[in-house]
Figure 1 (tube, helix red, strand yellow):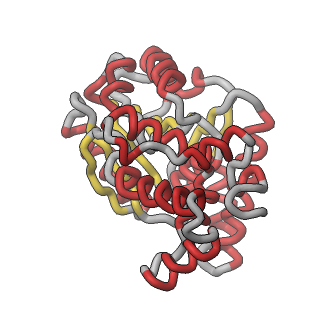
Figure 2: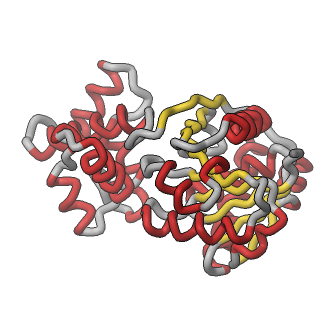
Length: 282
């Protein structure tokens, strides 16, 4: 099947980034969210992101306008009936994702692959809810999507080779590098990353060092481009907590137990950059 039209469900940070890279790659995109204000904000975000590429000389003004012209928006998934490939990028909640995948199965053509941008939720579970488990896979983009080159492709228990091949070929069209992961909690990326961020939070809570000291050690001592606490703030502390809960519940190992300080900060609404307060003030 020739893929010409991409559906993206969820117009948040990840969804808008995913829509942008597909539009930049020459594909028509329908971006869906529940309300127009979310879609308006996403279009503004995409416009601003493309303008940065133009300012750096990485994109021409004409190419920017062409990318924006390929982007359509809708407040109902009914508009995805003609999509050739659909990516889900809604909130990191298993129940909400299962419900969405069941709904997409009734709307999308039988041959269409449904991909989830989930960072930790079981693809096998989503596939079972979808009614087309062989055509469901994980397509975990990294944030910020327009800049980061990795896409983690996750094969569920029933995901077909053909579906994985389709997703891998799409990654190549986007200029991204695809790496396959089995369907285990956290996949590859977050199974390794989140325990490090969690341990940095324990170190703050126990007074081992300040956030600044911990981040400096990891940047200057370990050559990390960003300290773990700065990165946690960037990801969103609520997202970190959700992923750690999936790891802890799914694997059962106490090493994945979320730091109590993280739980308190999320309960207080201190979510990092997006709330203006996390381990740092923004």
